[in-house]
Length: 254
Ligand code: ATP
Ligand code: MG
Image (cartoon, rainbow, N blue to C red):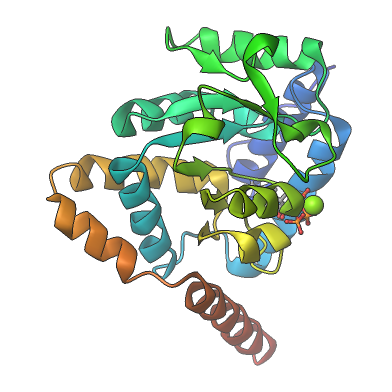
């Protein structure tokens, strides 16, 4: 596949660059066609939000980091997450002592291999979800994502599932996991089902989580627990919807 050069001063250069990355990953076999559609849905919500990490979202980011620092955690990655944030996911996993597990809706051994290779370029850490002999089925879930690694998601207290489908978020909650997500759509089932929803673009959210994590690592356990107990996801999503409503009204008055 050939790509046009995006001029630096193009008003949508940043967003087009990300699109180019995800298209390239589609050609490489890391991302599937439905991943491209999901990305487009995310972009539409980002336009509406204003393409910035909202001040209110920092509350969710800090609560999610507190969970990762306090409890046994797994970061579950799919093709889009691998394509867009591979290196930063490794940094976040190292800072929070979390495991990384590959979990795919459209699971083929070839894709698992491709994503595994991508992570292995940047880390010696063991990447879970790749070896069939450790995979077990999560009850209730029908798709191929029902497989989870005995050493990872199954044993964990907390599962961080950026850019995930609603069914899987729900089934993880049903088997007693604390679920964290990044999803630009505050109305998605994933956003509503999760315990902590970061409504932000993954391109901004993971780097900000890393910065916060570096600061929060010094905090005493009780302070981290307080950050968590003060967080309410329903309220968080309502505040995001309030922001969207106010923003759209102010734009329409111009
Ligand atoms: P649900 O199943 O939770 O109701 P959905 O069916 O609309 O959601 P899926 O394709 O299952 O969507 O999940 C992908 C989600 O990821 C979408 O809600 C989309 O807005 C979000 N998304 C896509 N790209 C990004 C991105 N770069 N950053 C953050 N979120 C994104
Ligand atoms: Mg879905």
